Length: 463
Image (cartoon, rainbow, N blue to C red; front, side):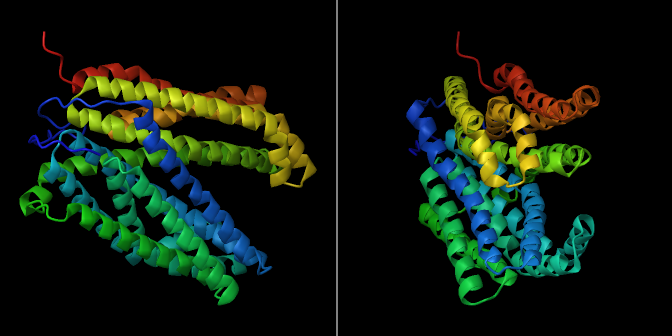
């Protein structure tokens, strides 16, 4: 990404305020959007492959308790690390704005602040590992053998927490700078090393569940060192931010407010999925299993669509930093255009290939028949959710985090209200309808307030 040499100005103290200074025009094209979206889509798609390989490797040992152990351990870490994913997305938005404003010192300071926060949180997670594990086992249950395997997995993998959070910060910084290929290399390298070591530690050295966890620790440490080396190479010769700037109270307050809003948004999203599963379980094992199978289709769609949402993050953040409204409008338009094209293709694939996918996932005939009855809802989720994904990206990049948080909470309330009305009338169709309303509310509520927020953020053209 090209950087101009014009001096920038300090960002406002408000958590949602953009960087100030002169307007710095830049062009947003289809190629600009896809240059970020395609590598990041590939990067995100490598993550479920890792989970599949880990499961397959442990599955070779022929012990169901070990499979259950890594499944529960994976859920625990998903919950913990999802809560701290703001280190990735928040860093992306703040870095992109600094790039757009041509504030090189602030660009460097964002990375260092994020790493300070990541180190503090990572050490705290490692220190609190025992109570976290105890609470997680109590909540999720399982047999004594499953809990023992979960405890082994968790105890080893928690050592990776500081490095994993540091990697979030590195990933967010590289994406914010528009270096999607660097982010792709780090993410696929991380998962590739993890996969190779999982196979070696389990099938060659016979370390069992501890081997899968140890592979993750080594992979996270390796990726962290690689990220640090790349960042140092980028920063070579550039002066480090002053201590006063690095620990500027207003800057830290802005980062914490942004991260807090994103965390609340993430918890609300987890709550919505938790409610969906709990209401599925209340209808019996067959409906729960069918809804779980169909939800996997939605998750696959989300991995594809997240790449375009990441492009929206970087470009909208850069436009806000550059104070250039045309680039913001263009990035919104193009990311939505490509998002709907991809969502339409995914919906078509799910609708036509859905029965085959369902048969591949489960052999239970009652689950297959139930899942096929509700397949049209799952096939529609990419089209229903794409606006929510893209608008989340726009609002994270622009650091309009309070609006994103508030609209997520409103959408969650809408989900619960729609369920209360629709479920007694339509049963499981009513649950899927409520979920569809939740997805649509998230996207359209943010789209509706975008013109007002953009008008308040960008300077008016002279005359």
